[in-house]
Each structure stands twice: as structure tokens, then as C-alpha cells.
Length: 158
Ligand SMILES: [Zn+2]
Image 1 (cartoon, rainbow, N blue to C red):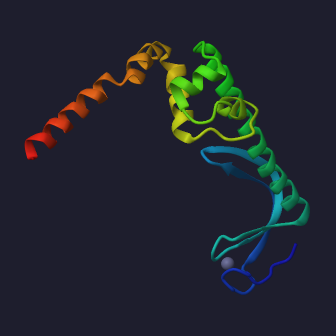
Image 2 (image 1 turned 180 degrees about the vertical axis):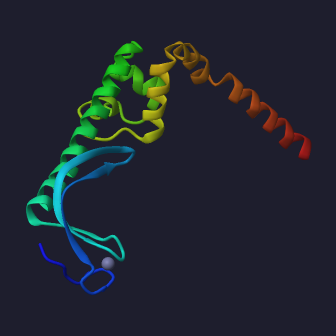
């Protein structure tokens, strides 16, 4: 635990030992604290280099965070779908499009849901009454009306 030269910025004797410090690991917007880590930190550029046991714990915490985050997202997809009374099949039809087994794969944490779909599910979780809008949205009457206007503009231009 002595001082040494920083490998990153090259400042001589700038790496000072530390111990008992907490650091965050993060994945997307999710974060978790890792306690009681030891290593060296550069006084010039703030580069941190963990001792071997701390480096291992830090890396493991990162792996566990990713694994847990994927499982939590998968569980949320399932919980919200059930709350909204969709089957996996109808959820694909009304909400996501894509392959018929898309939701099954999201809910088994096999594939991460695309961010817009995850945001939509969380919005519907907060405002389940908006499910009533889905039928009208999927019927596309408003979009068809816009298409009629486009067609009229084309005909006028001829
Ligand atoms: Zn440095």
C-alpha cells in the first residue's frame, strides 16, 4: 500500500493508497453501492486502481447488477402485462408488434425489451385506463384520415 506513479497520467508518486471506501457500479440508470473497497487513487487525474480482492468484488457486483436488472425488467414486463389483462399473444398484437413469442422472451429475460416498449409498459402501469385508447389507436382511423388528406394533396398537384 505505498505510493507509485500513475499509469494513466504519468504523474510520479501520485497514486495514494485508500481503504474502506464505497463506490457505485451502474448499468443504464440503475446503480448499486459496493462497500469497503481498497486500492490506490491518483491525486492528479483521480484514476482509481483497486487491489486484487477489491477489483474482483467490484467486477462481481457489476455482473450481479446486470443480471438482477435484466431479471427485474423481465418480471416487471410480466407483472404489468398481467395487470393490464393481456395474454402474451395479445400484448404483441396490441403493443409491440414483432414475433409472436416476443413477450415470452422478454419475460424470461432472454431478450431485453426495447426501451420504447418498456417505457410504454411503465406508463400503462401508472395509467392503466389508457388501455382503452389502444383499440382506437390500433384501428388507425386518425392515421387513415391523414392519408386521405395526403392523397387529396397529390391529386390537386396533378
Ligand atoms: Zn493520474
